[in-house]
Length: 278
Image 1 (cartoon, rainbow, N blue to C red):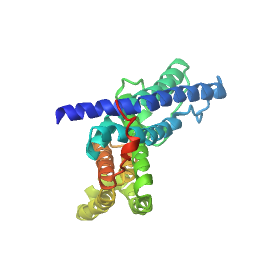
Image 2 (image 1 turned 120 degrees about the vertical axis):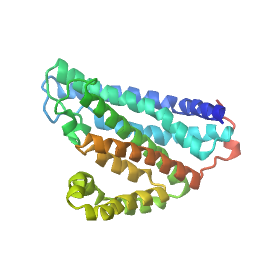
Image 3 (image 1 turned 60 degrees about the vertical axis):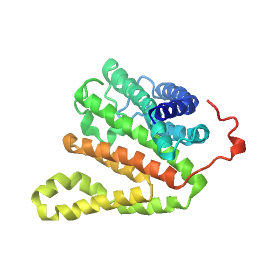
Image 4 (image 1 turned 180 degrees about the vertical axis):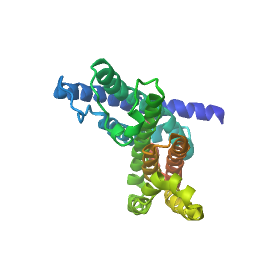
């Protein structure tokens, strides 16, 4: 069992290698283009392409799925292990892109150039960076933590979407319906702690509203729902309360993706597996 997991991780790294390298190169080219476009005059609303990092993570998951599935099939790796090993391999790329984005904008422009610049994602949870003094500061590490998981969620979404497109695309309609039902969750995330303290009798009902869409998201194998909820918790100002929920939503996205791949299997014809060797 242990050797299979280790071998599975090796297969995942082998599958993601080319796409990860391409993502890093493209991200650097985008950074060069955006910096030249902005020039020396940095506006508060200037962008440096960090929004593309999430999109690149999505594409990485989407395109590596085919090769990863083929290599996993050659060693009969179970669907659950496929998703877990793919997620493990993507963590390193997520951290790398998050570090690059923070270092490029926060360390270079904000510290060296003395310009106050915010990344696109920072504008969603700006309170984290009000006292940003560097990546190794408390707020800097918190921002790196959130940004890494957000990028990773996009990878899981791309990986899952590639699976569902070739197995049961109609399921995406149900995902949209669940997402609509999840929208009220937004308000609960922000007013929850104060509301529960003043209205303890309503707490069970509010918790039920929070749990139902998540339960539906898991049953219908929708990692997108957990990703959406995770971003909401990233926007919460209460770090102590939000951090455990962020981790739960992240793990929930991986678990729902594993359920998706297990429930709707995409099998590669044997004649197409011949070239899929490590």
